[in-house]
Image (cartoon, rainbow, N blue to C red; front, side):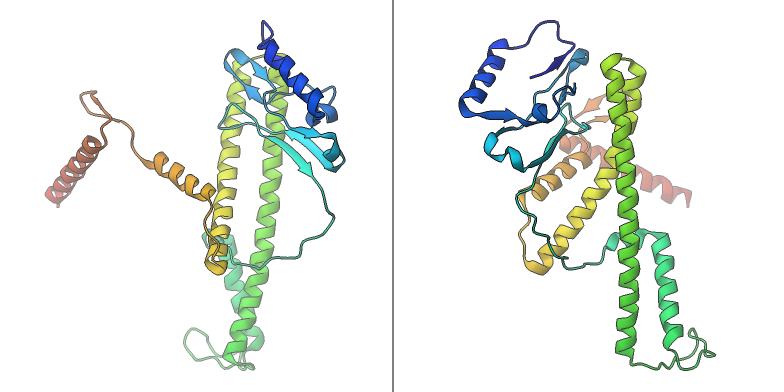
Length: 286
């Protein structure tokens, strides 16, 4: 629809046809409707060309249900996501079933907090505080089962609190990165400086790492839900696993004589030979 850095109008007949269809079917370009004076684009091409190729067309019947529409920040693609927020009901969802986030076990700060929680519960319910827990059998004012339940309750509270803090910090960081990218996009509209593009790519990389961490959390929760409720894995996760597999393979290998090989079986043979030579060298040293 809208373009930037085009010498000539691109596909004028197609553009006219889109407007014709919009008129015949009573469709609205909701983003333009809500942002009548903004210049933003969803596609970035060679020679710094930009265009708003992606958009939502809706009927006027559901216009009242649109809360907001936006063009997101692009990374890992030349297209930006387009977003639309619809609200059809004010019904509030209840809390879901809580599941422990195993990734917290990789957080040193959380592990130290759990150790402190366990120590606190034991000290609260022990019969004789003078006894050494490391060398003697502790006696408690409550049953072992109830003690275990109290420890789990304490750890659960810490896990929820720690996860909530991490989520807030992650959301804050993501908003900061998106804001920086939006500022750089505005600079690119004024002047196509290579330094600005390089800075944008660096921030995109930070955003990619942050969002990949969030995706791993989503996958973990989905797998946990599938195990409990018998939910079938969706095509999204299957395709995601395939994508991760292709990222791990070695598509090309350059040998010492600068020869390039791309055949998978030849690459595997070279890897085997490399490890064999390495083992021989190590054994010879010892």
